[in-house]
Image (tube, rainbow, N blue to C red):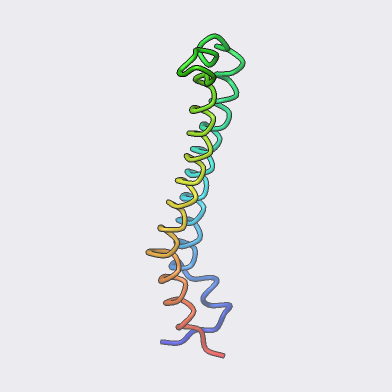
Length: 100
C-alpha cells in the first residue's frame, strides 16, 4: 500500500520511529554528559586523586582523560551501529511506501 508523504508523516509508524530516535539520542547524550561533566567534577572535587602518579611522569588524570575521549568514540560507535542496523532500514521501509 502506497501512501502520500502527508499520510506517512501522520502515521503511527513514523511517530514511533521518531520517538525511538529521540530516546536513543537522548540516552546517548545523557551518557556523554555524565562522562564529560563527571570528569570535570572529579577534577574540581578531587584533584589529589587525579594527581596521583601512575608512572614517572604520568598522573592518573591523563589516562582518565583519555578514557573520556575513548568513551565518546564508543558512544558514537553505538549510535552508528544502532542507526545502521535498525534506524536506516526502517527509514528505507517507510520511504518505499511513499507514492510520488
